[in-house]
Amino acid sequence: MKKAVLLLALLLVAPAAWALATIEFMKMKPTAQYDVVKPMLVKFLERGYKKVPDNPFVLIKEIEKIAYEKGYTYQNVEDVALEAATGLGMIR
Image (cartoon, rainbow, N blue to C red; front, side, top):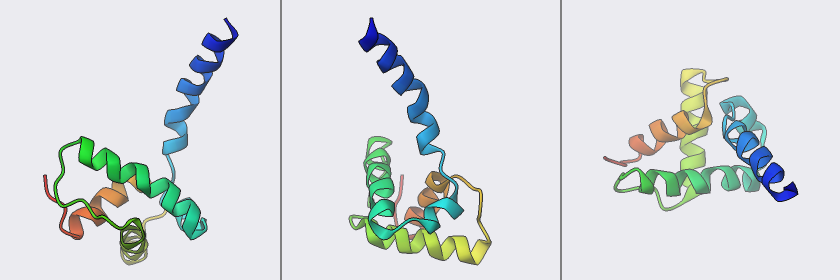
């Protein structure tokens, strides 16, 4: 019973962890940013994208560039990462 409650709690909290604002992402250290971006790249592959960036740090740099250029602050970092990866040549 304890395991079921713990699993349910983890399932409820996990999606909230991915709702990360771009401004909070930019405040993170590079290693923490890497930990956020790496699963996104896998998710892009699962969704059927091709030419997915193979270097997370290149994508991180592009996310930051777009955020500064467009003034993104509270946009979901995953949406900005999709925009950045598309700008780097990722296609559907």
